[in-house]
Length: 207
Image (cartoon, rainbow, N blue to C red; front, side, top):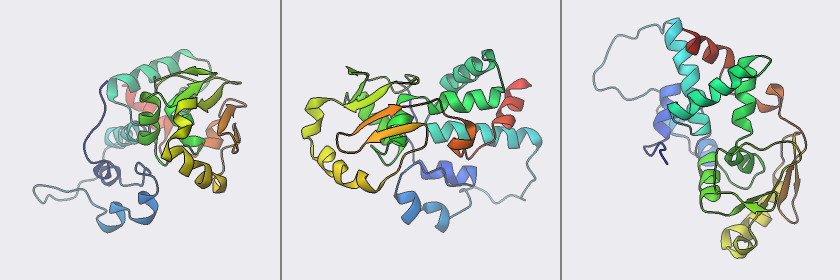
């Protein structure tokens, strides 16, 4: 399965914004705070971004945030186009419904990349069944829990303590004693607080 494997801090510097790709490190020890500008092999006169460049930047922010490569991101956009309503909002909701993102939103991990790894390694159960597909879309009423064998790991034991101080978004619920989450409703764009503009992504693909 293809995925981005280079240094993720470069992605934040390229985007000019904190995308929270490394969890707590992005808060306490962010490279963007020390070196806000991307590295360049040669010094060039600063140029103003065109409208196309700004649209591309917003699209890349969305890709980097959710850890998706271009082909898969384009499929999500095509799916959002086929749905009724605003395409940009539909895209954002689809991305939030990914299983790896829901695992992250429930507080089981500090970053989406870590959540993706948990799902791939078979730690997570969806509606009582092991699911190792990070891009699987959850729906209202779904439950997300841990595989019984994985509850004996050191990571799980540490999580039971650290998760007590965490909160979840309003479209999710979490049983902090048993670490079982549930999707109580579909997310709305206002609840997600996206760092990118869905309208710009639609304009980018509309050309």
